Length: 134
Image (cartoon, rainbow, N blue to C red; front, side, top):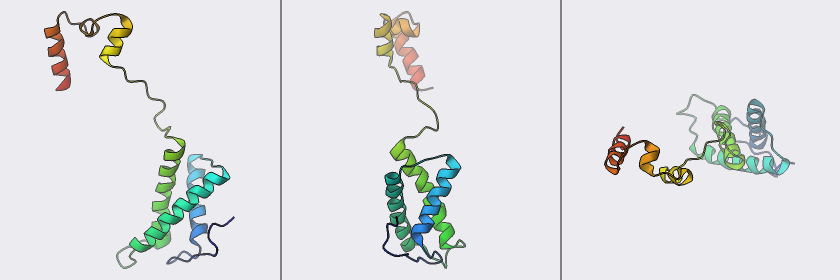
């Protein structure tokens, strides 16, 4: 179901809503993404807002790109940004938890110096100083 009451023409794009829908489908298809109908409509309204902002920024005399290409490139990137923001970023897998030396020492029942492998607090300070400036 269309979000706009009538097709809106912007420069060389006869129907900006159809153009944004096609951009969403193309990006989701390339990246194996899937959206429920309400998520699709939310993303579409977001892209329409971006497209109308781009209309104000686009200057045909300063660009070698048509508005349709310019809009598709920017909106394509925004589809990925929106998808990651709303549904999470899984590009790098799950990150391991970050543990502090205090946590490691407490969980093993040792001192921080023992965890690092130094024999005294002076050695510990030296190791930490070298690590900080490495």
